[in-house]
Length: 417
Image 1 (cartoon, rainbow, N blue to C red):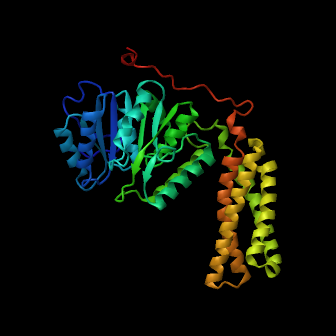
Image 2: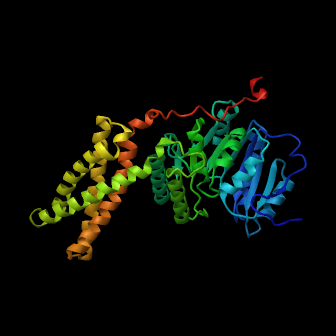
Image 3: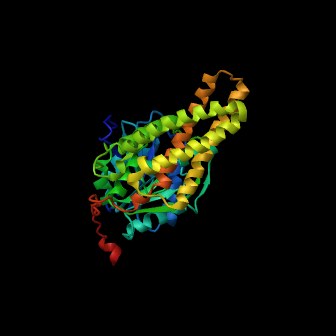
């Protein structure tokens, strides 16, 4: 009999023989309204595990309050197939699904993958092997590292790369792909981290990894073959908004256990960057309008940007990002060139758009250039903070040494025999 419960009270259908022996690996598949995809994917996954995976395993389908009969299919699969479980949650959220399944798992390793199986299953063994051997604490699939082969549209590619670049700029993480739906962890490590993770939806992955890295966990990356699902139910705008909100929470030090991380200097950096940016933008506008009549709009804009960007970078070097250390000469040149190029491209596009639309009023043109400079400033902030001024992140700040790893790991005796 099916009873309605809250998210943390899961209704589970478990084959009688599944609980007899704890599996080495539990693979969680979170689903929401996947009645058309679920059976094909679970049968394919279970068949692969039985045929090619050398460790005992169980597949746990966690239904996040589906309304289309997904749990009926999940329950039938659990009854028909050995090594398949079905769990029903009454609230949505991928993080909520992983929290419920991972926290109660009896397996050595907990993992998860998206129901569309976008990631090649051949990457599963390389994902879990370093965890079973004790080499790593967490393993993630990455679509952004060398060796990965990815098939997806330019929109998703751009969003993914921008998100991970912003993430690295904000928190200085070492992993390359926070949101790939293909991850695993040693169960005891996951259990210690789960209470610290606040998010229960799409940002769960990012927060879990950031907290793990800050506590000294060893994160192993596996470049994967990944094919985008054109029928994905992920709402990109809503998810991006939630991810940015979660990132802001982490950077402002309100994430569990984050109060002592020196990388939370983001608020001070943003404030200093904004003050310099306002002055720099005003100076650019003055120079642009002073020279536009004689040099032309595009030449005046380019010259003004060269002067303002040079002054802007010098001020940030000695003021905004000074506590982060002195950049190398190479990073200084390349970072400055990247910031200047971005500004020139965006302001030139704004000028082209103004010409096409027929903007003649100076204040409308000024508004367009301010917007273009604002967009360029976001890119420049990432370049300066993440690329040019990372020297201080390589060693702990004086008096703020990082604590030793808080997650002692013990190899299972069966692995050492």
